[in-house]
Length: 89
Image (cartoon, rainbow, N blue to C red; front, top):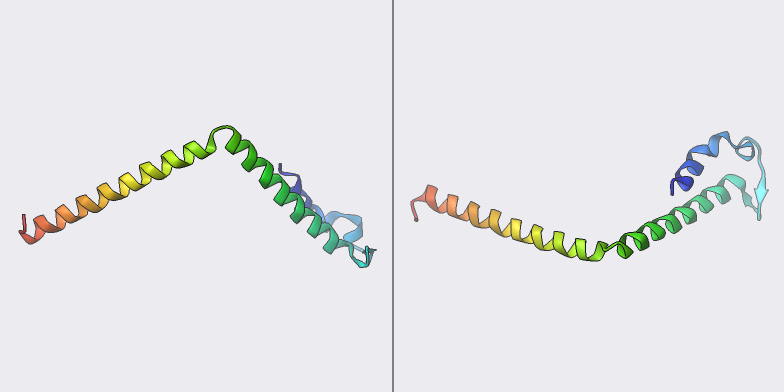
């Protein structure tokens, strides 16, 4: 999955980057960079597909529920502390 990232870092060392070469009427470096962007998108799609297949959606829902519960508890604790400090309680 790191092939596109390595492709980006390899650009300055590739032979076509040192010379004015055209691929499909565009500079070779531009075509290479665009190809690496497309490969990055494809790699991210594969990673997401594997994550979802391994139960990622359920894990995301559990984490969102836990985070919401933690936020509610933090808000409640802050409100109680503010009321205590003001002498309301």
